[in-house]
Length: 461
Image (cartoon, rainbow, N blue to C red; front, side, top):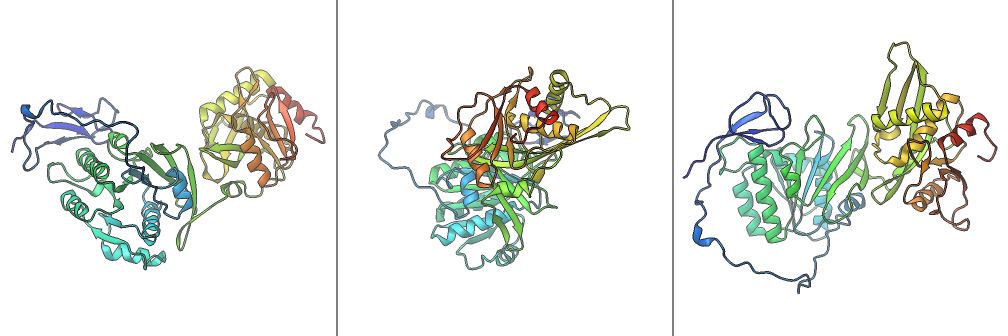
C-alpha cells in the first residue's frame, strides 16, 4: 500500500495545510486543524499512463430513454420543497439542529413512499434497529414495508445497496459514516467528504435516490466541508425552535426545482403534520390592526406568505440606544431608519428600537422595507394601520417606493385571508382587476406619503 504525505485539514471549512497551525488561514477557526494520513484503498494503485486518453462515448440531448417520474412521498410540503418529488438517481442533503425533527421527517417520508410500493431502505448510524422501530410505532408507521439497517461502515453499506438496488436510501446521519480506505476518525472532514462522494456516485450510477441527513454547526451551517453541498443535487435546511411546535423546511439548493421554497410543519405527538396554509399560522389574529404592527405579503419561493412585522419604539435609559432585530437584517433596518430620519423627519435619537417577525420566520426580501417602515411609523405615532391591510414595497435611499414582483400572487393570498386593503408602490400595474379581487389599493410614491397618512389619517386609507 502506497502511503501519501501527511496533511492537516481544517474541520470547519475543509482547507488543507501542509503543517499544523493554531489558527486556520482560510476560515479563522482556532484549534481546528487535524492531521490526516490519506492512503490508497485496498486494491487501488496509482493511475496507469496506458489508460490515459481512453475514448469517451458521447450522446446528444435527444436521448432514447424517457426521464423517470419523480417519487411522490405523499407529504405535500416535503414534495413541494423538493420541486415536485424526489428525482430518481439524485442525492439530497438534509441538515438541521439536533432534535429539530430531521430523522422524524425522513422516517415519515420513507414509510409513506414504501407504502406506495417503492423499495425504500433506512440505514441508521445513530440508533439501533429496535429504537427506530419504536419511533416508527409511535408515529403510527409500524405497518410500512420499510427495510431497516444499523451500520456505519461504508463498504458493507455499498455492497448491500448494489445487490438490492432500492428506489430510495436514507442515511442517518452522514457524520457517523466511515470508510476503511482512510485512517481519519469518523466525522472528520476527510471521512465526510469521501463517504458523501461515494454515495453520490452510487446514486448516479444505479439510479437510486439517496438522502443524507447531516448535523449543523454553531453557525447554522451543515457540518463538514462545503464541497459536500456542491456534490449533492439538493440541500434542504430544517429550521425551527425546539421550544415551539412549528418547523420550516427550506430549500437552499435544488438542481431539479426552485430554490428558497419552504414547507411548514407542526410537531405533535404523532410526528410532523403539514401546515397547508402557513399565512394563517404567522398572522395569529392581527388583521384588525395593532399599534406597531404591519402585515407583509411576501414570497417564499413560488408561495406567497403573509407574516406580521412588529415594531416597538421606547425611550432608552442607555447612552447608546439599542437596536434589536429578530427575523430580519439589522443592516437593512438601519437603512430604513436612516431614510425615515433624513427624508421624513422622524427622529430615533435616544430611543430603543425593537423589530420582530412573528412566528419565527426569517425574511430576506427587500419588498419588506415598506412593511417595516409602516410598523415603525405606527409605533412612533402610536396609531395602528387600517384594519385588514397588507403592505409591501422596496424603499430607495431617496425615499421613493420601488415596485416589486408578483403583486397579483401577493394580493390573491391576502384576499384568501380576508384582507381588502393594500399599500403598494405607485406605478404598480401588475394587480388583479376589480372583478377578480375587491381591493382598496393605496399607491405610495414616497415614504413621506405614508407618514402623512398617520399625521392626518383618512377614513378610506
